[in-house]
Length: 129
Image (cartoon, rainbow, N blue to C red; front, top):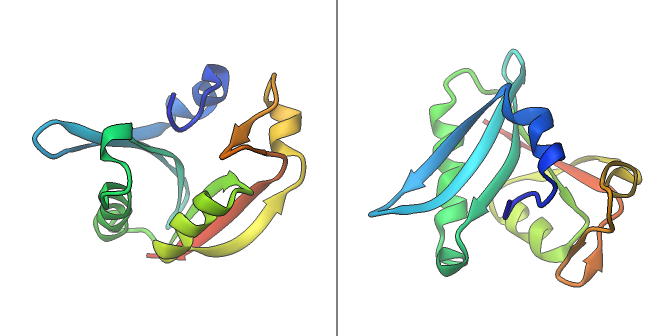
């Protein structure tokens, strides 16, 4: 629920996704990734436990995914239009791909906020594998 606070949104991708856990003397992070088509994956969510954030676990986890998805050509991730999230993904080698207008307004049952900013559009980023 750290990566997506609305359970029914998680339910939409969890069954056809693969959940991975980063264990470094205990669980530090988790992610769910889906295979969208041949060579195309999407990082549906990634969450690092609060006590371990800003210590490199998220970036390390993404590097692990890119190296170990043997048939990956491109990895997409969708996030809110929030400077901290966009900066994180840019620092992990992602570039902006496209946007889905009003995604958070149309798909969530309550206003979504990150770092005090209301999320409206979904920003998709991509990284070549």
